[in-house]
Every structure is written in structure tokens, then in C-alpha cells.
Length: 394
Image (cartoon, rainbow, N blue to C red; front, side, top):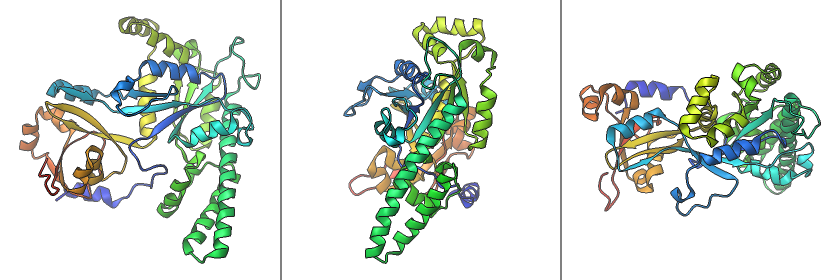
């Protein structure tokens, strides 16, 4: 039986999540040309996990997979000294620069927008530095104008998609009295009005039934956004930049999502240095790499969490979508675990760290058995019991 605390948590359901229900989610780096996207991507690529760590899986030149820095994972590896260590990772895609008119096919237009449709979240890189050597596609540096340009292009593409969907629904409604067609038609009208009002789909307060339909559309403005402000090293070091207050004000008026100041050229230099030199440089110049924060924030933004399985053979992070229940989390390990799910034996990382061993956690009454309704939390350490014909328990 799950403890009462778990039940009370379940009593207040979370807002339904927009996006694909999958543990294989990815984030795309988006922005105008010459804002620092490719330098950021190339910097991240140097930190990426070798392709051979992903058998039977092609990693394209514009994809990188970067381990999530996590002290909990490091601590578990120290405790168990396992034969195998598998960290969680974030998959990042570099997407070609967008220009005004992309929704009508300008620049790489439709190609660019189809690449955004294929990712689950967006790192929106904004240029907040002036440099006569690096031209700006609009001839002057104005990150708020750039924000408006990209946001409008994504909205216009979504309006185009919804218009096409409405046409198809209207044709189908002439041939059928299916109530579901009417429900979807009404939602599309609402979404179109919302977009025409200059608002992004992810910022709407949609009902669970709406979200179910919206998730089949994969609209561009439904994807979560993290804003990366690329400034010069001096501004980054002194934590001041003339463009930041305007960017902050714009973002607050458009959903208030996360803004991360960064200095892409600094990050490139740090990753090119030996580790000890990079640490010394950061100490002497009183700067810190923003990369760990960027990776962790991106992972959380696309609604991913992970639980641990831990023992002397392996310490592994298993990526799942937030709000996943125990049987589906077990299925991330093997489909048999989900089919024959009996229970999840769960301990909190904090309890294991404080008490020092699994036996001590059990003795303190903090090792719990959870059933099918348990919603897995980030950082849970789980041992699944399952039973399938001819399978036995694990």
C-alpha cells in the first residue's frame, strides 16, 4: 500500500503536459544567423558521448548527446563502485538559422521549420553583443526584435497548420456526424484565435482533453523554450549587459520562461583548454561555465526526469517523462517489467545518502513498496518486482 503522503500528492493532479509522451525527447538550438548557435553546438559536441555508446543508433552531424552533470549519480557510483556506469543524457540538435519570412519558405524556411517540428523543446539563442566583424542579418543588434521575428514566424506557421486542419475537418464533417470532429474543430478555432492574438500555444490554459488533441499536432509554439543570451565575456563576467533588461521584460510578458546568460566564445575557449587550466582561468577571472546549467535546464524544460537503479553491477539513470507511473517507468527498463509489474521498491536518494546503506534505509522504515498508481519522482532509487509467465521475479 502506498503511504498516505503519496495519495495526497496524487489528489492534486498536475497540469497536463504538452508534447510527445516519450522518454526519447530532444531539444533544438534555434536563432537567427550569426547569433552564436553553431559555436555553442560545436562546444557541446566536444562534450558529447561517443557515438559507439549508442549501438544501432545513427547520430547525425547536427546531433549531440551530452551527459547530465549530477552529483547524486557520482555519489552512487562512489558508493557501489559498479562495473558499469550509465548517466542520463540530453540530446541536442543544431537547427539552421531562421530569417524573416521562413513560414513562406524564405531562407531555409520550410526545412528549418520541419526541423523544429521534430524536436520537443527549444534553446532560443539571442545575440546580445556588438561586433563589427560579425554581421547581423538585420544590420543591427536588437535581441528583442530578433525574439519578435522568431516568435512571429513560429506562430504564422502554426496558423497555417491549423487552417489546413480546419479545412480537412470541415470536409470530414460534411460526410460524418462524428462528435469528435466537432470537438476538434472547436478547439482548432480556439487555437487559431489564440495564435492570431499573438500568443503561443504553450502559454494557454488547455484542458486535459484539449492537450490530448493538441499533442497530435506537434505545434511549434507548443514547445517549451529556454532563452540563452549570448553576450561578450566582459559583460558575462560583470553580470551586466545593456540588452538584458529589455530581454527580461519581453520574456516576462510572454510566459516568463527561463533566461540563461552565457558567453559562447568563453565556453568554446574553456572546452578547448585542459581541465586544470580551464578551472584556473575561471578562478582568476571570476567566471563560471554556464554549460552545466544549460544542459540541466534543457532536460527539465522538455519534462524529462530520471530514476536510478543501483548496485555493484551497474548504476544507471533511466530517463522518463515527468508524471510517469511506476509500471510505465518499469517498461523503460524492459517491456516484461511493465507487463508483469508487481510493485516498485523505492528509496529516496536523500535517505540513502543520509543513512549510508540500503539496510539502514530499511531499518529506518524509509524503504517503501509502491503500486501501479505511484508517480515516479526524479532521483528515486527503484528495484522493480515483476512476474510474467516463464519470467519469474527480478
